[in-house]
Length: 371
Image 1: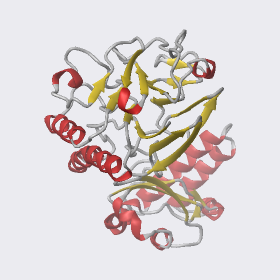
Image 2: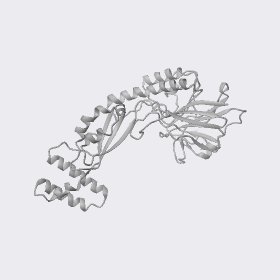
Image 3: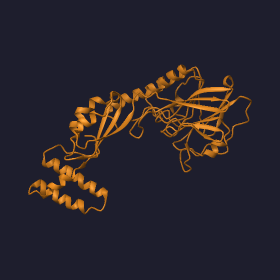
Image 4: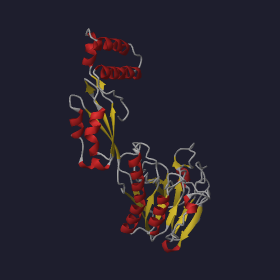
């Protein structure tokens, strides 16, 4: 028997988006809720038969009213069974959203930290799963093995946990335990970078990562998985449903005007995304980050600038001048030459940046912070 289904995890709805201004953070939370509707549309468009949501669908148990409404509305649009395995952020409890909301009948939420089974006769499929009931979880898989199955039957496991990290406090899972589980496919969650399709013994497994980035530790395209099982074989297709991405762009400004150097590396798509632009290379004076941001911010949803350039050696050569600038640089150069580590040299170089900015009556530059 064959089966095609959606596997998603780690939506983290109602994330704080602390790196964004308050107005844009609120906008992003609204856009995040739209992930639910896009998931439902994808399921219907692809003709999928089942949905597995492997935890951290919500960022916490304290969700906005609008998020609960959208969760119920989007899940109600689905004509297929939906399984939710709560994770460490949305763990199950008497007061959690899953317990408070009137979820549609096609949705099954696992509520206990022991693996249970739900049989779907119309699909000849069994779905095993369990729930976090606290922010941490002991290992839930040791000793588990699916019950003997009939011909053509498919067994799935929906679980939040961390593979290959024995000391994890988030339901540590080993490949040996996956291999011994006897299921056909394990739909996992927790790690935010997609695993791709993996195999332990005869058991296929994956985690899709988060479907939309929320910070610069979640850059690039993000995915949900469409999984097809047929006769012991498994195919996985990653699908992007994100509205925006986080990206980091490094721009070498050696011998170039920083504004022009950044412009030449931009595409039309940057206007929808959140970017951190890092300036590198050698410069005769620190780039004016405030001026750069004023001229560039319209090309992004949100822009952060970082200065990781280095002062050219010629700047230190002026340490011999009989001027305030020369005396200042001479003192710093002596300390720079006697520094014992690269970190110390970088600190002295930054002191030169601040000092030169003060001497020239320019706006003070902080190397790693948004102006």
